[in-house]
Length: 445
Ligand SMILES: [Fe+2]
Image (cartoon, rainbow, N blue to C red; front, side, top):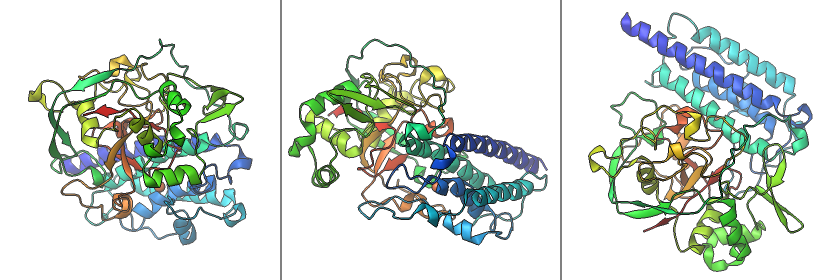
C-alpha cells in the first residue's frame, strides 16, 4: 500500500512537471507571429509547425499503446510528427508549407492527446502495463525532459527567425562587469567519475549509464569561456582563411558554405553586430562566443591549445584539490541548490551574459561559468560509456548518434532547464551546426 502511495506521489509530481513544461512550450509558440508558423528558420530543420505537433506526438507514441492501452485516434499525425531531422552531409529538406496540415488541425490533435493522456494518468489507479519493463516514472521523465530539451533547441531555431516575426519578450538585463582578463586555471592530476550508476534511482538518459572512473593527467584550462573579444582577434588575424587551422572536413564545410564568422554575428560597414534574440546590438565583447565545433577547434589550434576532453571538462567542474572527495560535487560551486546567482540557466534570459558575471558559481579550481551561459564543446566524440544499454522504447535516442560525427557538449545555456544541469547529462551535436548556444574554452596539457 505504501509503495502504491509512493508511486502515486511520484507520478503526480511528474505530471505536474509535464504540465509546467507544456505551459512553457505553449508560451514559446506564442512568441511566433501566426504568419510565420510555417517558416523554416534553420535550413537543416523542419518548419516550425512540425514542432507544434511533435511534442505531443512524442508523448503519445511513448505512452498510448504500451502503457495506457489506448488506441490511436490519428495514426497519420502520430507518424508525421514522430521524428525530427538532423541531416549530416545529406541534402536539406525540400518540403513546402502546403505539405503540412492546417494549424487548427494540429492544435486539435495536441488538445486531444493532452486530454486523453491526462485523463488516464491523473487517476488514483495506476495505469496498467509498462514499456518493455520500464516503470511509468522513467517514461514520464523521458516525456518531460524531451519537451524541455526542445524548449532549448526551439529557442535556437526562433533565434534565427526575423525579429519582426517574433513577439518581443523581456529579458533580464545584463549586469555591468569589468572587461574580462583571460587567465588559465591549474587542474592537478586526479580521477574523474563520469556517468550514472544503475544502482542509483535517479533518472538519466541511456547514454549517462554506467558510471566509471578515469584518471586525468594535470592540465590547465581557460578560467572563462572564450569571449567575442578573443574570437574577434582570431578573425582579424585571418583565422578563417588559414587552411592549416582546419581539419579536412571542417575546411571543406567552411569553404563550400562560405562561412566567415559566427552565425550570431553580422558586419555592417566595418562594425560587428550581434544577433540577440529580439534585436541586433553592437557586439558584446565579454559575452561567450557561440560557434560550431569546427570554428572552436580552429580557434584552439590558432592559440596552440586544444578543446578539453569530456573527462577534463568534468574534472575542472566537479573535482577538487582534495583527492579524498574525488569529483563528488553536485555542482561546480558545491552542494548549494541551483540559484540564479550561480549562473545564467533555467530560462533566466534569452541571451548570454559576460563570462565573468557569476563568480559565485566558480568550481573548486576557480573555473568560472561552467554551468549555464552556453554549452561548451569538448574534443570527445560522442560515444557510449562501458555498460551502455539503449532504452528499449527509444533505441535510437543516443545510439543513432554514435557515428563518430558528433561531439560531446557539457554545461548548459540560459535556456537549459535545471534538471539537465546534473553532472552526468551529456549533450551532443555535429561539428558544422552553428546555431547551438555553445561556446568553448581551451586547455594546455
Ligand atoms: Fe524530439
